Picture (cartoon, helix red, strand yellow):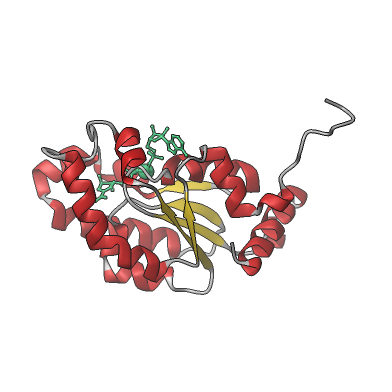
Length: 203
Ligand SMILES: Nc1ncnc2c1ncn2[C@@H]1O[C@H](COP(=O)(O)OP(=O)(O)OP(=O)(O)O)[C@@H](O)[C@H]1O
Ligand SMILES: O=C(O)C1=C[C@@H](O)[C@@H](O)[C@H](O)C1
Ligand SMILES: [Mg+2]
């Protein structure tokens, strides 16, 4: 956890909660989650958005709203076309000044334009890491994830090896979610020190 990131997120949560009637008072920050399939980008992103009051955007969901289901798009147009359109969707979100939590598709970092956009000063990028066994438990047989078709375990391992350097390159913070619930991961990002505890005098 970087102190600076924690402070910015805490400020974002505080300001968002306090200034619903004055959106201009919100800091123009985005928290962007990257990482492999099953890291929990979508699930932790939702929890983080609820925690901070920031709007939630998932690039896979936005992609599907525009182009229809991802497996069908892969089957019809192939992975290269998917990557190009995915980069446009993410570029659209990152090109707007509105603060949000943005959960990216697992392969978004493969696109150089997306990596450049993530390096901008308004985005705090979190690499959600996860151990292989837990990721494979979470993604099951890989349903809905066309790149895992055929050999989910072997493919997951290979593409993590190909992408891990890119995840680390774009990240301001690395959080290993292995053994954490999604809510715990979201609290780790905001800063555990701010997590409300059950009072011992009022159980
Ligand atoms: N920290 C967690 N603990 C337990 N289960 C989790 C956790 N995070 C996610 N899950 C579960 O794992 C599955 C995959 O999570 P999720 O869809 O959020 O991953 P993702 O990183 O967004 O994957 P993709 O790159 O394919 O979009 C979901 O069923 C989700 O409920
Ligand atoms: O890691 C990947 O290459 C992918 C992950 C998913 O989030 C989707 O973006 C798509 O299924 C491809
Ligand atoms: Mg997702």
